[in-house]
Image (cartoon, rainbow, N blue to C red; front, side):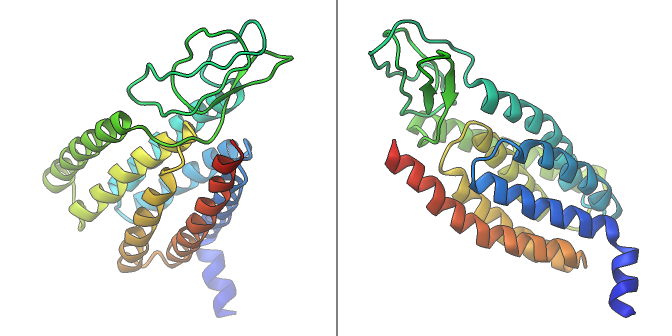
Length: 236
């Protein structure tokens, strides 16, 4: 009865943990349904983190809602470029925030970004798993540092958050990792390993035990994701 009562009193958090695990499973499989599942999970955790006074994490879930919609669009439509002609491969990287390794079965028109593939019948550029470029890595590192210090100052001075530094660190890294996921950049899995490790400790101190279990599972599944996405890189 004790377990039943506990679940009854924390059913929202338990539901969020279950959908969160499903989200990572779909992410590993590169299944586009991860995005609608992610929208549901984010909506649940906005409430969970608000009650736990983890305001940066709560704001992160709002960001997740927006990036999930954008990621859903990118995964369906690709970079938004269409190929013309047949038989030739185009290589290039004109965008500072996109990786390399794109392939187009079309003419040699420039495609921005990386990790793009073209269906010969539909002539639609598709996103594929790719490595991050040096330029992208530098820019994302700068963005992370700026996000971290801005969030830390806001949480420390304007809220009653008990852990502003740790909360800001997790939130800033998560923003970067989610953007990289939306672009199918392989290295985002390394960031999730760091995030999930720190988050597990933080949520344990806040007594969000179902969420602790969720993030431990997240961390384990991140290693699986590294292996599975690596296979996609090898195939390409």
